[in-house]
Image (cartoon, rainbow, N blue to C red; front, side, top):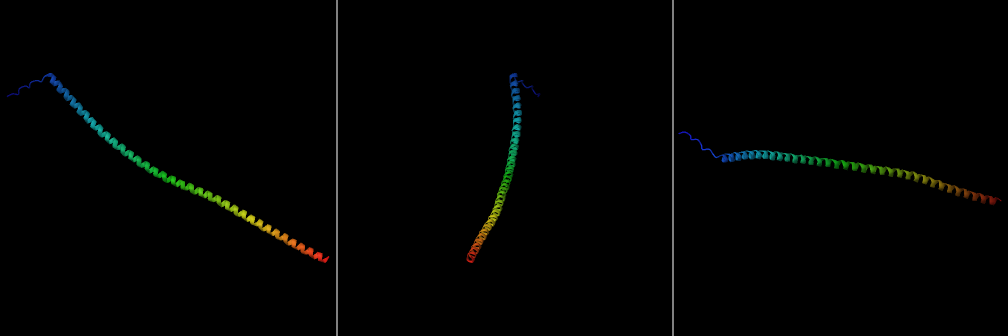
Length: 135
């Protein structure tokens, strides 16, 4: 027995099959592209998230460094201000000591002058009394 030739399908049915086959192939190709794009997008999103997390860590590290630097500068400025005020107070104390010494000398000189005046007055009285008795 020989193979008998297959009956030919009507033209419309062959066109529909061809059309369906083409659509199926296009749909498969588009699905493959979509899956590749989705995988690529997922990878890009993962990379973006990792990059963002790394940047956040770096920013946090930088912020901690800046905080330490600011704290050190604040302490240095505070010490500088304290040293400046201490120097000013030391200068004022030295000036007050000098003024106190000068006033003490003036007081001693003044007391000495009064003692000399009183001594001279008493001597004058005694001399006057002695002269009055002699006369």
